[in-house]
Image (cartoon, rainbow, N blue to C red; front, top):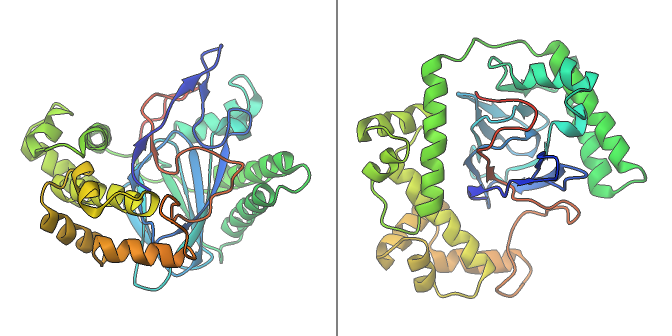
Length: 335
């Protein structure tokens, strides 16, 4: 899904209400089909863990990229830029859980938060942890995630307790076994902060005529520094990222509305129809009209107005790919 701002709400005590799941049960389960819906660069204040169920996933997080085969996964800490793609044309699917740290850690004065969650969240050497099934403790962490996933999706009796217990076990495995990486250089931390501000600017203005100078100005840097940040942090250029963001939004409108291709092009910032078709094809491998036809056929003949998206558990609301900027209520997480 495309990058979209999370609606950060506060309760009467000033505590953040998470966008994934509900305030009472802040967890969401997803089953992504990367050949249909690649996961673009994004970040959120939640913890995330995913496991590959089909194909090979190219996962990027914390400045590293790795190819994950079926059965392997990755844990991603709060505030870390990350993205997922398929490696080849072979169908590629993954399951993921996105959950607020307080689901496991409880309140800020609890021993669980102070002894386990806070050290993990504030450790700049642990932006992520790749989990290989052949390594015993990593297999146990993956199996714990899968138990939590099944409990929530199937709504088994007491699934809230079972999910929390399983995710707690996963966190325990990570805290006690995951090695610390090298400290992230200050320059990389500064670049991460800048790229987040620039991605948010693109999110807010992708439908407009946006220049590299404007994107750079949103982070108070020069155009050349903007180009360097995009190259170093996410391996692309500002214009390519803007094109991809527009194409992703166009794909959502093609699947979820009855708007014409021309109307969608205009709403997504493509002022020229031929450029829209060419750009869309570069991202999705086919033209807009063909994409809409394939999406409807894949959805079993559903009418316009129904999104062709991977199944999302109806109990759990919240945007799949949010960009959150406010700090966690309990700690500051900057990677």
